[in-house]
Image 1 (cartoon, rainbow, N blue to C red):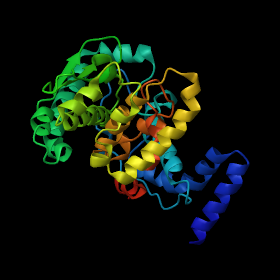
Image 2: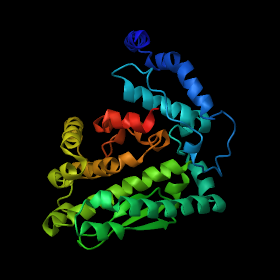
Image 3: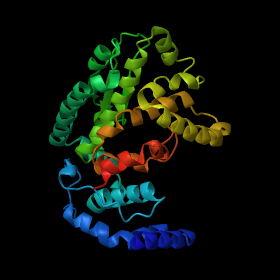
Image 4: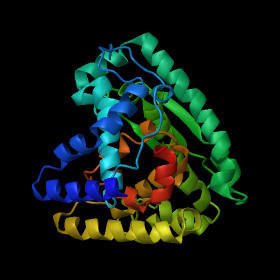
Length: 324
């Protein structure tokens, strides 16, 4: 108890001084250094032009007891990225993904590497699609066959593409399209998992809405799908629950009011992306599955920024998935 009180007091003093990162380093150095060494994480050189691994085999979950109350998520997420990605892959790859375009190109041109990544992606897609079908559809009769028929297309494209594509036809099962450039940026299997779970979240929302042809038509109407926010919320309460939906709406509304005057934002798509981010988050069972999303704070035309919404995911679930 005394340790936690001291930690909280230290936290307040350093934040007021504007040195919160220094505090984190000082306060958790011993605890997390043990985590880091036991995880088998070192600063040794890795050939990033050919690296692709299952990083969760090397790590254990974090000791979260030392984190001051009220700072749990931000501190934990920062330290996750620092110890799991930056220490292993370097400062430029702090989410265990590659940002440097020249390095991505080298990885994309490495045929052996791309075969390994593509093989893993195809296998994992089939596993997730089969395992998550019942969880998604929850007894909805039309939803199940549609979700189970979702296909995966891996394409050769210089653009970083990862998207769920579907038409206005209610019986069109849709497809997930991912480019080799997008795949090449992932340094571990866990980031590919995250990518697939997000796109299957889209497939789930579409499949559930397809139970009602009128709602589906409204949801997919290209003329309305930016101006009509309400359709973007279809299936939120039914699938994500009342509590999470209320929290997400509140968060997005606050961000929306700050950005509305600048124009160019599609808030209907913000809700679509939010559903996809949260639908299968309970399948992201290791800290490595979270490193990318916890750093995604910038809002774009079609996305509110996942990190801005993670507070709405129950803290107890986060602890179960990330802490020992």
